[in-house]
Length: 235
Length: 211
Image 1 (cartoon, one colour):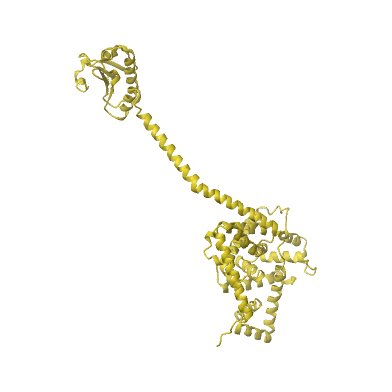
Image 2 (cartoon, chains in turn cyan, green; image 1 turned 180 degrees about the horizontal axis):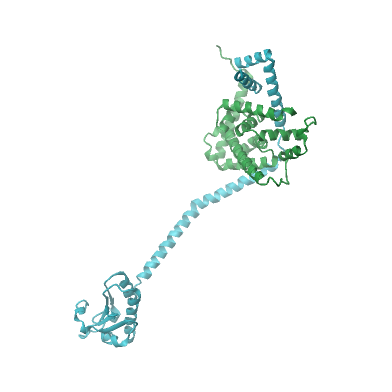
């Protein structure tokens, strides 16, 4: 019974909204003619809808000219902003990426170049090579001198352990026999540099060096006592 | 058995409607291609209806106007997402209703926070608070003014469930086609009818003594 009433109520609601046609519409009209309850439901819906219609007829008090101007300005802003974003997307962003790549490549190249500068002092190469490889031979062409037969070289030791040798001959060689730490290799480099700067006869460097320098724990002795090393020195 | 033939006036109305639809489609396509003037025409075509719906949902003319501005800008920015170019109106109204619902939710949160501090710039929708405070609604024998009745209706609509409120505002008040309302609410036309029916019943219950 309740469902029937609700169904009728729903139909009357649609009738008020003008959504019924044909037989459905006629059926509801006949029901309202015969049934006071149906008419009462119709009145309820009609009154409520009339109230809503009346209320809905109130037009929002908006200044439409002002509204249009403001909207046009906002759309203009959006377009300009959009174009700027588009330019950014299309040009600036790729250019920035390219610039970043260029900077990265330049830095990488610079780093690489500094690591392998041709004019770099050979002593530094000794130091670097010594930390990277257990056995490194670095030539000092500028130290090339005569081929003195006594140039057996100088052994550089550190706390009794042989760190390297400095040999004379056609070219001066420094050999690091074991992975020296940076500091030790640096000391060795300084020794050799000192010798290169202060010994006039580079070919005699090997003989001069032991008495010329003593840095830290590094000690030197003539290699003539240690013939086993000579074979390792290229002449 | 025999199908009724449309009368001349019906046929003419259908032709005019088709011409309008075609014109609107042209504007939408032009706007999609970046024609701001075409979008401006579309905006002028729909902004009053959008404002009316926004006003019924928000109860405040200033907020409604701002919301419609936002909706139109959003529509302009997202025109490329409009799949069916011939459904611009309902698509725009969906944006309006979504923004309105979001606005109501955020406003509800703000009001919940500042419950102890009534806003100083209370607008038309806020008048109901004063109306209730003055006891007018508790004294039905005292006739309500138009503004007070309007506030009472707004309050009753605000109290409806979301879909009932939207269906009532768009269909029963703004007279939008049920099909469009169904599309905006993502439901069937029958569901729209039911929402309107239930909303009107509830509204009568809320306003019964003043009708």
